[in-house]
Length: 353
Image (cartoon, rainbow, N blue to C red; front, side, top):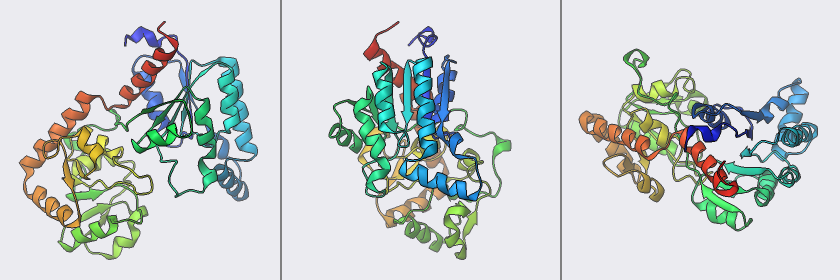
């Protein structure tokens, strides 16, 4: 697409706005590719004020998507759409926006794209948690999903077009660190993800039993602190990319809660020039070549043996890391590539300028 195609577009991103890896990543990427007339309307800004009691009310409102501030945000969103008439209204996991508001926005004749990076079809949350998102799918022009299984699930509840929008890396945040950015004394093996009640704790304990030190996020894995060999990493979220570049093997586990077959780390890690070590999934095998761009583990024993092997074979590990980096760049897995896809789909429906 030519850069001048973006000049007249108005894009309104709508979402929580709480973390830079989500809506803000798309907002920044949109500006980077040459379009500045875009903004983010963040509902998190409407749930910050008040003391302890008000904070509790806000948590309840956000969980059930009903309440004074939910209605206030919906009103602001509709008014903004009505008066400013953005070309694209992009809803990033907007379960909190009442579906009737989305219907009214569609009735204004605006193009609406919806994206959900969680799995709204799991049993982890109560049925009401995703009800607005589910109902709103029928009033969007296109619904993007994060994982392949969600395509058919959305098609079962809506006749609207459904497309896969893979996770992404951000080139400003996921890059090969310079020498002075390397964090000394980082363990060779780290895991910067969250704690889930699945096999990941058993897998980590198996590594510890081999005498291998593991770097972990203390807030998530405090319970493992009793084991010798655990090193808690300082400010892991702030130093995320630096830690990835400072270790030898950044472990990837996949969320069972979200039925993940890949995760954002599968793109962030190779983008940083680091070694991609993941559980095998068919979806990942379709993206990366096993043994060349990625190393899979198939069970706990395989997990332990491969960590030990690649800790001892630096050249082989680094070749795989470099090939993985070339892959994500060549195939276009940066946040700006996702934004270009969104805009391309918009032009496919409404026509070129």
